[in-house]
Length: 318
Ligand code: UT7
Image (cartoon, rainbow, N blue to C red):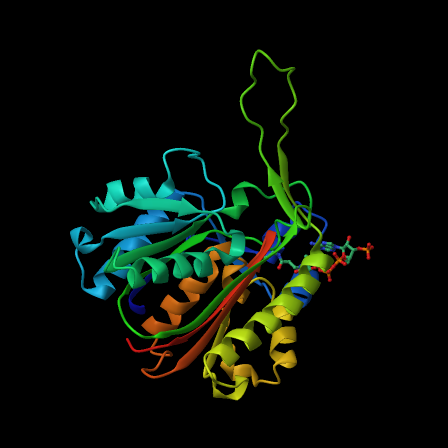
């Protein structure tokens, strides 16, 4: 595959750490020093569909393609208001595309899952131009009465268009089954043959320290594996675009790989953690501001609830 178009959309509402300290027992110093986050964007006047459609349209425009030239659409999403139909159908209805489509839930690693599936579809001649949209609104399942998770997560959408090419040098997904490290459960409808209250809604809960440890361990392991598979060394990678989960996690992975800070561009300071959308949003922002150069060798890595991980090495040729 190769990436031929990028797009992203962030909500208009900026929520600073001080705004959270108005109703939670927290403060700017704690959040900034533990996570790197100074502010985040939260959905207010826009819907997740609005953001996704805007990111998808930008990616199509950047790829110089019309919606009817897309022959597959994959959407990565953890949860949204529509259980069915799939978000990919709703996005396609809005942009006017009739391609086969489906959603996948790879938690914060969903962009890597979508790339893996897209690569398989391209290699087996099932598709030529694939639209990938990562659309996330974790603000809608955090617990806003407690300070643990809502300080971290934020909303937004990122998209890429991929087509046939030789830019993907290696990709690897892993799973270490772990139900409890990050979990969100929602209640379903009552059924007359079962007592009430069997299904419960539990807002997102997370064992932050365990996730931190799993993230650093798995990400540096995955990165080494894909870099080796691409017949490169960490020094030969120009940019490491990591899931924007926590600045300290990114710093720790960087230190494990003994790489300089300038190779790890970040936007988490102003965006917060946008789950699977974080990497495609970062890619779009870097490309739009001229910071991705033709020929750059890029390493991607993400991890999330499950516990799932993914990493890839990609040559940038757009
Ligand atoms: O996208 C992937 C998903 N998630 C992640 O990548 C998250 C990975 N983990 C993390 O980012 C960090 O573990 C957190 C930022 C979530 C937490 O940082 P930490 O350094 O691991 O803090 P902690 O959970 O060990 O808590 C330390 C203290 C506790 O107080 P005590 O028990 O020491 O008195 C917490 O109650 O900080 C307290 N605390 C807070 N204080 C102020 C927890 N949350 C907050 C808060 N503001 N928001």
